[in-house]
Image (cartoon, rainbow, N blue to C red):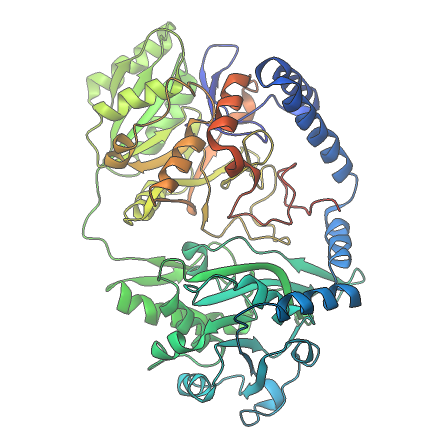
Length: 591
């Protein structure tokens, strides 16, 4: 459904001219936010008003500190002191089934024999009651040497570390606590502290939750990575890569098992300053090609005919699976007297590939719009579905979905344009996976800044647009917006879904969410049914949203979402728990 102008959730609204425009949230700016919070006194009661007023002032306080300064302060606050280490060690000692851990360092002790003490782990091993041994491997260890280390070990878990990374003193303790009651986990990863080499010192790298799409685009899990030894050994035959690439290939074999991967939301290691800025999260520029080959080797077995191409972010890859054909896509565009936008939107879509275009007309009266719609129908370029009466975005989209003939539905705002050829195919390619529900794209404002790169639930009012207003090339202390990843929701301004799934789930909630948040609600319902929501940066659209008046948020829809989803809206599994939900630029929460 159409996108919003603010940090609050997805929806649609009308501009002053009556044009259907995107809306995911509350009125733009601080005045709008205070107005929206005030209206909750009627819709959500005094408690809701107090809660939102508190969030407003907390955000103002957060934004007083520059982002990197805030991250460094967060890092300092989260360094474990002696008392915290004692408490952690006590909690770990009380665990009934404490896992036995080995640490294997690639490049440890100069590639000496296994069992020789490796650098980077001296502070962590003494604090852990069942750390069996440190294993040193050559930095370019063969796949057989990696398998041999797993075979010789008698530990429950083997933690792989790369030379240049140092385990934090609490790393093994944090891992043991995270593994409690998680028997199905096959591999784990955590956050990192990166020495920048600059005057400011280290910065954290806080990683998003587990995402197969992201893992197949970049080695974002970084170091250390832990594997359950027996299961890893069973999958470690004939690893073709060397060193880090061999470990990546092993992890690729492990990651497809449901529930196999555990993100540990704690800093586990410190990385020495790289000779140059890292190309991407967890990546070294000199290892990119070896990692790409490891991905290609795995993909050739898993997806015959697949190819691995350069990704949009430096040092990343794009896995393309072989496709037997191009499934039919129906593009559904809502409008009301939006001829100036339609003249850009419709041709840009039709240049992509053969498509069915359905324009849902919510009572257009302007002669220019009516003439344009008539011409499209006469030429067979589009079907126009009249939808007179009160604006109800969800009902309009549901009606068009039932009338559509394509296997996939692409809901597209009238004020969008395809920017890069192949964008619609890129979205459909993601949606062809049987476990994927909705797919969203990279939407850019006319000035090149990000409008949409995935939604985060709990951000702002209900959900917000992470990275909004930032340039897509920026790399911060979170993931790059130029990498694909699983997200909680995507914006309905550019929203692709399989038609059968959309109808199976009842479409958008036309009764309770006629304007805002229906896209978020649908994605959450799809997740309950085991369907994941994916954001792809390989589909790029222009979104003119900033040229329209900010939508007015109906607080009844906010309350409906809060009552329906409750605690789901308090945290996002694909964001990071240490990041603030008060603003759209990734920054740490206040102490």
